Length: 245
Image (cartoon, rainbow, N blue to C red; front, side, top):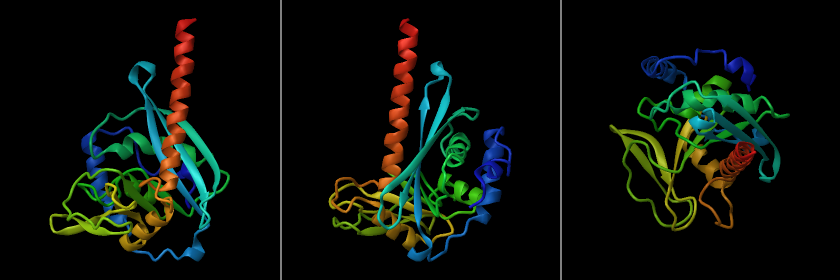
């Protein structure tokens, strides 16, 4: 994996939305949508997520990365980072708002992940370059988009059983899959980030989910979500206490 601090310098982040879209169009050609990613080459899997402090509290992104062992799925370590927000909220351009903080959090890990699961889209994106693809290309590491909701595309309803899935189609192209990660639950939207095939991405996402079926969300991204939410709560509580003094 490329050093996250080096990855941050591969392109500018202080760009306009129009320039950001142009960069997505240019860089999507770097996405590799194949890769068997054999189990023997995976030792550590990371989940990444981002929360935000509101503008009145400074407009800060809080990124959290949680590292798990594979295939045991034991939590190994976690790291967080705070970064001032320098890019506005624009649908389809969330990677420009979130990735600088995620890269800073990844730099805080003692061991590098072999795969990163992102709470967001990969190839299932209007310009085929969502956050998981952007992060994977920057770091040259396999990555997978594990989104809780659909951004674009259409799909048939997958079967009710765990592991059932149907292709997510946009303009005649298969861009991802609607995957039933828990029996009877709403599907997760899985897409290639970088250097992994869609079939392998689906398989890994299913492996990452709780086998007891307690949640439809893969454990790495679920844990990262809870991690940043707790940091945000502590930060808000500390700020509120300070304001009352």
